[in-house]
Image (cartoon, rainbow over all chains, first blue to last red; front, side):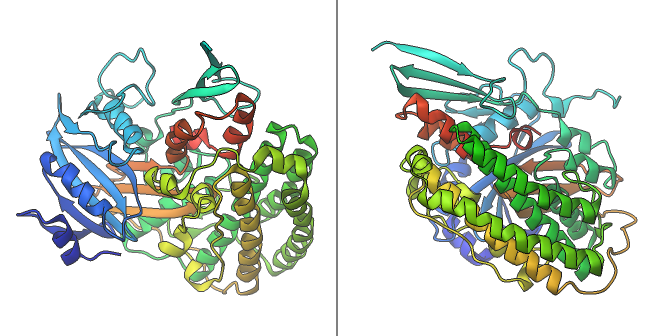
Length: 140
Length: 360
């Protein structure tokens, strides 16, 4: 387990705030802080694994959550633009991230720089149209 | 020697669900493996945003047939956390009972699938025959062999009477004796060991790098189990061992799963013997207030992760599910190269992949 004070100490980045949220600890970071933050946490004894990424529309932005299991939930939160956004891939640090990033790319159209192969995961190869989670089509 | 590509799937006699594995082979040696999924993607997370919280219990139950109960349990526990309600004790115990029965039937299903894949059809037949006893008990409790419909937000809607409890205990006692056959096969059958020992090895360090969870992680020596590490339902009040092995091969994964069946039987015994009296469900919330929550449960294949965000309306603003098979795909692309093509069957069957779970 890791508590809020130790999380801030391990991350060692100015201006961060740790919230207790959703049953775990949550930290909002900027895109250029993502790889250093994940790298720092992966070196901590409480580190176990990256569970997954959640991407969701929040108004005029997309929020991407990195769900880490460290004996409790630790969530890194990033915001990016609704269209044309690109985040740094963390697959070099955590190989399973390659698949989670492909899903985020499929469903919300977020790009990932230096990804080993950003091919469709869930969508067919010939998918036409907006990313499904940004589609405004009415319920049938 | 020149390479050739062998496409396996999405439809193939070896595969129980559609998945595409493209093997580049040089002679009898696998050089490269590429796995493609998405053939049973049903958009259930997006659907969940357009259904009410109550309706979504049915939606998440349809993610997977084999582990439907743990899906609904994780979802219901997440909504209960958001709404600030707690399931009664009796409900928590019944949830654990069905979870462990589900774990037993899933592991036995897998044992049969592995045995069939390596030509040991007799064990496939015996495993699926014994599995019927577990499915019968689940049907007596919930009305369903696979899709139980037992969980509701706030508790359960299935109960177990004193008669059924005694009958179930007797059946589980007989079932436990039948498990001796499978333990014997694991320990002493030379053909089984020849096809599984030293095959598809994932060393502990690589298992950590690939974020493995569940029996594959434990078979590589990683001591992780959400029932102990993030306890939920009645697990804090029950005793069980987390089973690990060290070799990280297909045989170790079989060992871990078969020994987990014994632990699950012990958990079922404890639940039935100490089932508390009381209501089955707390009052369902009138609304789910804004907030977000994460929930982790130990499905038969490992860590099942749920994230729910609420904005105060009748439906979740976001439902995200990560099922335990996904890290396995990534690890398989690493462990398959170097193997002989004849070992592919044991490794892919030994992985206990659930494609419906992964695709949602």
